[in-house]
Image 1 (tube, rainbow, N blue to C red):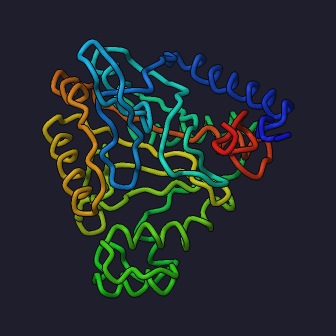
Image 2: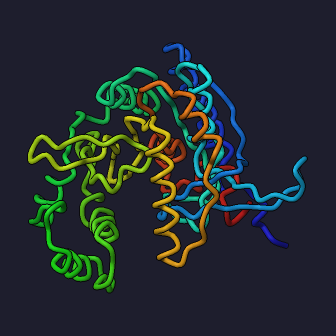
Length: 324
């Protein structure tokens, strides 16, 4: 008889998970941040070329329609912000196809929150505070690390100015893959994940800032004080070599957001990937007016894994993908 009906997390671990989720809610309640719930299905999905969205066909009042399982609750939450919700947070079920491993699961829980009027530096501090609160200890000092400085230190070149042939050669040699026809950002992503990320957050919380403008996603852009190049107004937080959070100074311009969605789908076509339906209701919300501010998405399963000392996210989920 099969035994794979059993949960991937022990009951003791699930009790610990419940306690930590209560701590998350207490953290935001103390700050007056409203908990919300939004759909896991939407008429639009993530156009990001690095994410594989899942979709299904459903019978709706409009007939048979394609709906998208959300890769994060971002689009619906931004519509709430545009409607005047004020600061909000959510523990949301999210879905990304093909992501299975010690740090990933196809279905997972995303902690996401938005702070109208809050500057990105202040959100970094709040994110660090939330991490410390859930861990129940101080993991060490908070360090801001510039993206291009990390590449200079670890690989000896500036990722913004390096020639593409030299970048491809380095990515192939250090990454162990044939990257000789790869795009600039794909080479940087490979080197970041294999060479730089494993060493981040080893002596505290490392916050990486000033990513390339091409990696802005749904964030604003600003000029690098070093040489005036455009960079993304975003950050990522690392602890113990593990990426925990990704925050943005949120883009509120509907026309710019539409252009980025269209650009994403063009890139998907070029790579032979399926196009993803653009979320026209998000664009309508942005046109109505979303307040300026910042937001962050945090992989709560990963944080709980660290807090409870488990080896993988599957060990803190009741039924990870292989046993769902």
